[in-house]
Image (cartoon, rainbow, N blue to C red; front, side, top):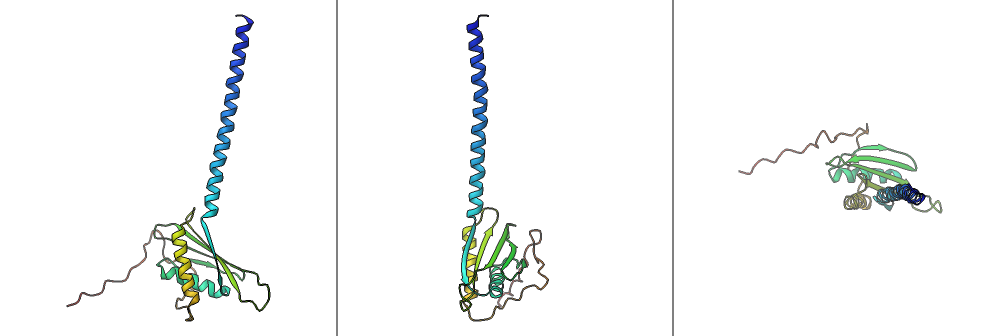
Length: 173
């Protein structure tokens, strides 16, 4: 074999080996980009709204709103400046609600809470807005919250146990 052929084989081998590196680099960039897109979708799945209310009233209104919409009251992990409420949809997707007390500029300012809702992994904007609307109704009413939370904080329903419905009313005669 002549030296010209050896050079061509060597050149072809180098080109193929570099193509493999290029393929691997492209795959890493595309794969990393897909992970980045998933991360952005996860972050965007959380909706946040601010309400004028003290922490205890916001917790009660949020649990009452979940109850009003037919969701399990879930588990409350209370705190003085941060609370979490976990519940789930009828399809078994998790609902995570964070309630954070905002810092006040002056002691005479009304307390404000920032409530964040995530439904499932990537969020459900329609359902989150529906929960926000119900929380707002509960907070804006001057009536005390008629919802009495479960003192044990134990989830009373789960994906394996469907929510109990009331009996049908008797037929009119």
